[in-house]
Amino acid sequence: MKCLNGRMLTVLSFGVAALFLAAITIAGQAYAESALATDFSRKNLEPCAQYLFGTDWLGRDMFVRTLTGLSMSIRMGLLAAGVSSVLAFIVGTLAATMGKAVDSFITWGIDLVMGIPHILLLILISYAFGKGFKGVVIGVAFTHWTGLARVIRGEVLQLKEAPYIKVAQRLGMGRVLIVWKHMVPHLFPQFLVGLILMFPHAILHEASITFLGFGLPPEQPAIGIILSESMKYLTMGNWWLAVFPGLLLVFTVALFDVAGESLRKLLDPGSAHK
Image (cartoon, rainbow, N blue to C red):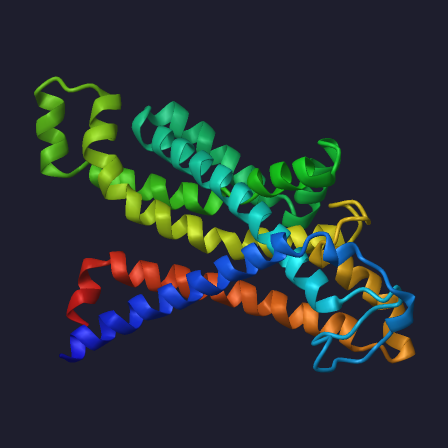
């Protein structure tokens, strides 16, 4: 009964985290136009029942702007993490199955990418592709694949020594077919968990380069832009312009972490006995 309760608690944690993230994403899209609405009659209002996060210097509702910014960050994070995870899966599998020469070259490439300061490489790639939505997504996607690629490579190297893989090779089954039929089902849980755990990194780095001015354009209600603009008004006592968006960003990242950790436990057969 204790084991069952533990599993049920993990499922509940994953469900609640996924529900909150979906609610933030949908609500942000629904209020996208309201986030741009200005009203100088209500500017610089402190948090209250009507405006939970207060209003800014243009009278914009900060709660609505924060939801819209987080919704955009989540969608960009999903796209970037998805592309990065698929790239990591392909590169990691190729490194472990295509011989020592390919493995050495890919390992060198991974070490090279990891050796460059992360935020610097992200800014350079984003800037090279014109910044904006496309540049940020490409920049995040091409700087977050290395860790998962190493995990996938290690898993494939272990699987290559498994008896059923050796039997398949002796029966004349090709490399591609072996990977597709015998390795992909085993690698999918690691891939899925790695994908979800990559989301918070993608969101934080998107917000970071946007905050520094190398990401989305200023007219977009992105969370990085909201935090960057609020810095000018903190000395005027408008603390709510940065505090609430920052806390909600941390809360969103924590939800992704909870979802990823819960999914890892659910997909781990050993956790069924804990």
